[in-house]
Length: 325
Image 1: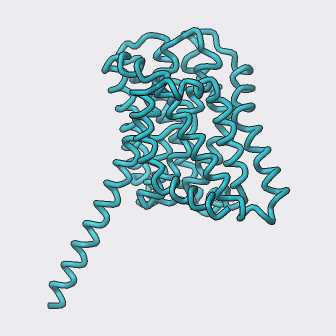
Image 2: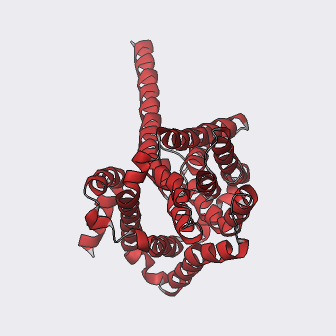
C-alpha cells in the first residue's frame, strides 16, 4: 500500500505535466491508445464512482457556509457557458453538427480537473469540490434539458434517452460510490489515495484515447473551431472570475468559480456525443478540442495567479524592509 500511495502522490503532483506529455505521445503514436475511445463511458463511470467514494457531508457544507459564492458558481456554469457556446457557434455560422457539439461542451458541468487547478491557483478548494459535486448531480437533468433546448432544432434529441444515459454514466456510479464509502467507512482513509489514483489514471486514459482518435480531426477541423473553443474557454474564465468579483465574492472564491465555468466535463460531453450523435461526426469535435485546450490553459492560468500573488507579496516585503531601514 505504501507503494500505491507513493505513486498516487507522484501522479497527483505532476498530473498536468503527465497529461500534456501523454497528449503528444498519443497524437504522434496513436495506435497503442485506440482501444480507449470505445471505453470512454466506462472510464467516466469509474471516475464518478471514485468521486462518490470520496464524498462526505463536507462536500455539501459550502451550500450553507458560502451560499452566495456557491449559488453563483452553479448559476454561471449552466447559463454563461452553454449560452456563450451556442452564441459563438451561431455567430460564426458553424455547421449544425458543430453547433450541437458546442452546446454539449457548454451544457455539461465543471470537470474534476477544475479542483486540481483551484488547488494549484490557491483558490477555495472546499468550494470547488462542493461545486463539482452538486453541479455534477444537477447536470444529470440540466445537461439533457439544455441540449434539447439549444440544439433540438438541429436534430432529433430524446430528452429521456439522454437523461438515462447521464444517469447511467454519472448518477448511478456516484450513488454506488457513496454506498461503498458507507460500507467501508472505517477503512476509507486507508483506501482513499488508491481511489484518487484510479480516478487520475482514468482521466489520463480518456485524454490519451480522445487525442489518439480525434487528434487528426482536431488539427483538420479548421482554425475557426480551435479558436472558438479557446475563446469559449477564456470567456468562461473571465466571466466566472470578473462577475463573481463584481458581485462581492472573494478572490479565492472567484478563482474557484472561474475554473468551474472555464473547465468543463469534456469526458461526459464526448461520451454523450458518441452515444447520441454518432451519425454526426462533427458533434464530438468541440469537446475533443476542449479536452486538449482546457488541460493547457488551466495550468497556465493557475500558475499565473500564483506568480502574480508571489510578486505582490515580494513587493510588500521589500516596501516594509525599506520602511524599517
